[in-house]
Each structure stands twice: as structure tokens, then as C-alpha cells.
Length: 448
Image (cartoon, rainbow, N blue to C red; front, side):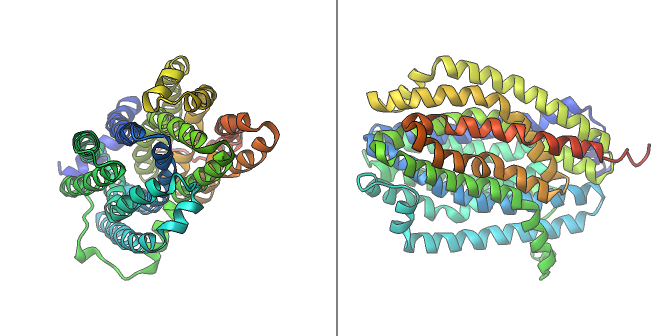
């Protein structure tokens, strides 16, 4: 039996719980490590002062922009690759993988050049104050230099996952994450380089991670090669269409960070620093639910392409239940330890007071997230781009942005602290009609 046949058998016959956990565990671990090194930046930079800590919140918006582009090309090409392999069309899968790689590389170079030219207005657009700006500018310039690597890394990572080779993706991401933590400690603590050390550490780790992912990609069924490059606009547009929900989700995430930072400005640097710290901690917890959901993505895409629709349904409900249980355990723990968690990143009484309240409300809302995540992953993986785009816009866009604009006008700082929690609950509730309609219209298996 060939490797392609073995992969087909694995993706279409392995029991759903075992398959999703085998794919989701490496993804979850890699996302946890990725968030750990983001938190490491926040921890080490927090030692430099409240304004420096606030700079990580400003640059987080820039990183969301880069991730928006990277995930659009990575998941856009990955979803098609998965379905093409499920249908036995290996050459077509390689054409989409090659186009996704080139698009991410070219876009990364453009972002690098334009970002360096307009770095000052960009930082103020993202919500920087005058006191935060010097730190944010230095940190952002390093991140911009890593833009090509970050986008290409997203493409490699997602195609590996969609082919059911999440372990290889995990190796690349975890290697970069561990290196980032080591370099943060070396540059900031050991050499006293300040915030530029955090930026250089992140840039170096991104390029190393991308190189390792490039090596891991050689194990894929699809290939990235000049022979598979096609000057076909339809291939590019299909990638963009498939990845648009990710672009919406990550892009609105950047706008949300911008809106949050601007809402915090009247409460000075401490509020920006506090909400930045809370965002990093919650993203770490959220990565558990997102990692399990991403383990479901290749299962949904591959089996949808193979017309084994019952496995798409079974995978959804297992992922939702397992993700809720696991994320719930993390959320309860973080709720009771909210104050020491915030204190870990910044020893500032005002930062701790603001961050603890926000943290506890967001922990309560985390239980609603797995349902939203599963819906988004299912629609995107099975080619339902419009529905996936709408669902992607809920959490960080259609609900969060109005809430963050209105609530502070009514409740002041408390309105800022509860804004993300309210948006998370609304996003989950409004996802229900989409789920019911999808399963109602899902056809029976092709061989039934």
C-alpha cells in the first residue's frame, strides 16, 4: 500500500476521537508553546516598565495583521489541498500549495517594506501613546523584519496540519518557541539590550522556525515546486476565498486590539499594559480550544472531499465536547489565580487591579468559545467560505467593536474590562442557527 493510500485510510477510517486527538494534540502543544513565547516577551519586557509592557499590546495588533495574511494563504491553500488529496488529486493539491507559498512570501516582503516606511503612523494608529511609542517603534521594526518568515511559516504550518501531519508542524513551531524564550532571557536579562532584544529574539526564532518547517514539509503528499506553479488567477482567488474567513478573524482581531488600546488611553499606560497582559494570558488558554478545533479541520476537509459526511458530523460534536471540558478546566483555574497571574507579568498595583477584573470575566466567557471555534473550523474546512467569514467576524468584529465603543461610554473602565467576555457569549449564541442549518442540509455518505 502506497503512502497516499495509507494516509487516505488513516483519515477516513480511524475512529473519530482517536484521529482528532492525534491531530489536535500536536497542534495544541505547538499553539501553547507559541503563546508561551509571546507571554515570555510580555514577561521580560514587563521588567522594563509599564510603558514598555504597554508596547507589547500595541505591537500585538501588528502581529495580528501579519497573522491575518499568513492564515489567509495558509488555511486558504490548506483547505483545498486537503479536499484535493481526499479526492485523490495530488497534482492539483501541489498547485495550490505552491501558489499559497509564493503568495505568502511576496506579501511578507511587501509588508516589511511598507511597514518600515510608515512605522510611526502605524504605531499611533494601533493605539500607542507618546510614552509607549519609543518602545513600540523599536519592537515593531524587529517584527516587521520577520514578516516574510511569519507568513511563510503560517503557510507551511497549515498545509502540514491539513494533510494530517500535525506532528511535523508542531516540531517547527515548538523549536522556534523554545529558541525565542532562551533568546529573550539572553538578550534582555543577560545582555541588558532592552526591548530591542525581545524584538531580535522574536525575529531570529521566526526564521529558524520557518526553516525547520521547510524541512518538515518534505514529508507532505503535496509538493511546493516550480513545476507546479501555474499562472492561473483562479487558483489564487480560490485560495483567497478559502482563507478569507481566517483573514476576517485575524484582521478584525487587529482592529479590535486597536479599538481596545484607544479605549484604554484615558486610563493611561497602566490600562493598556493590563489589557495587553490579560489578552496574552487568555490567548494562551484559548489556544487549547483552538488547537483541538484545528485538529478537527483536516478531518472535516478530508472526509468532506471523500464524501464521508457522517464523519464530519461526528467530528464536530466530539471536538465541541472535548474542547469545552478541557478549556473549562483551564478557565476555572485561571479564574481563581487571576491576580497572581497578572502580577507575574507586571508588578504594578494599578495594572494588577485592572487586569484581575478583566481576567475573571474573560475566564467565565471561555466556556462559550469551543462552540464558536468548531463552527468556524467546520465551515471553512468544507468550503463554506461565506458562512465561515460571517462566523469569523462575530467575536472580534461584529460584536466586540460595537461593545468596546459603547460600553466604556456607559460604564467607563468596567465597560472595557467586560467587553471581550460579552462579545464571546454573543458570538457563540448567534452561531447556533448556522450549525442547525448546516447539519440539516448535510447529505448522507456517498456509499450509504
